Amino acid sequence: MPAETVGVEIRQLMLTGKLVRGEIGLVTQDFTPALCMGVRGRCQAGALVREVRPGSPAANAGIQPGDVLRMVEGRTVRGASDVRRLVGSLPLQSKPSFQIDRASRRIEAFPVVSDAPVAEPAAPRTVHIARGPLADVEMAKSPNGPGARVVVVAEGSVAAHAGLQPDDVIVALDQQPVTDVGQLLAFLVKEHARALVTVVRNGHRLFVAADAQTQ
Image 1 (cartoon, rainbow, N blue to C red):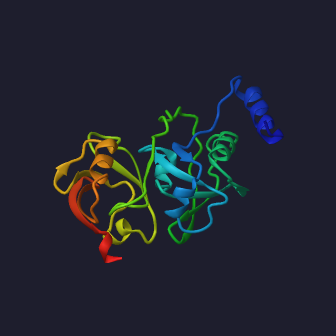
Image 2 (cartoon, rainbow, N blue to C red):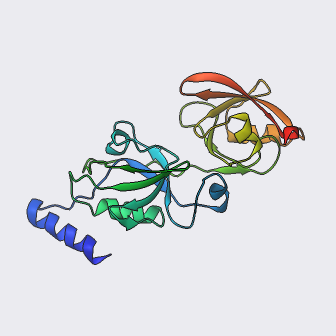
Image 3 (cartoon, one colour):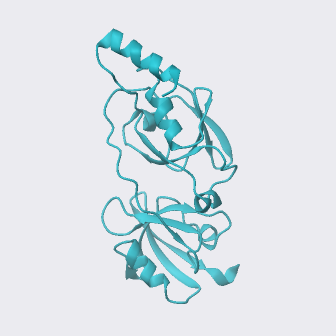
């Protein structure tokens, strides 16, 4: 454990008689080669924001799923473990600087560090689609009801040109209901270049036409 973290914990014990780790209400993950394909900029350092708890300090500060955390209070973030360590060592009620890459922009957020417990959900199993009209898309289980959630859409892919976006939930393919990622993969085993994708985005249903023959 770094000396600075130990120092913070000793001060907490002296002042409060208990040990509390800082939280801001987000979950991050390390980059994989497949994820790097869908994120602009360098992937050598940073952590990808996977989830932001509604109403949390991170959400109130404007941090969003898909953001890439580069620095926390001037310290470089190399992966998800750095985020947990750095945030956990921050003084409660402080407003540290978070340097974030979002698309092609560098932005800054200032979440308030809280001691409220944040339940960190289990890491979803992501599936990389390798071919067909949804090639180079990362999928995961839908968090709410049936469907398959889009995690990453690679820049320049057929799906990206069609307008598919991260956090879209695919609920039908060629008007056949999709209940989970496994069923979506079963549909995609069939050799075809086109797909009419029904997605739910921000509570609204819409159609996306992905055609590999247009590229």
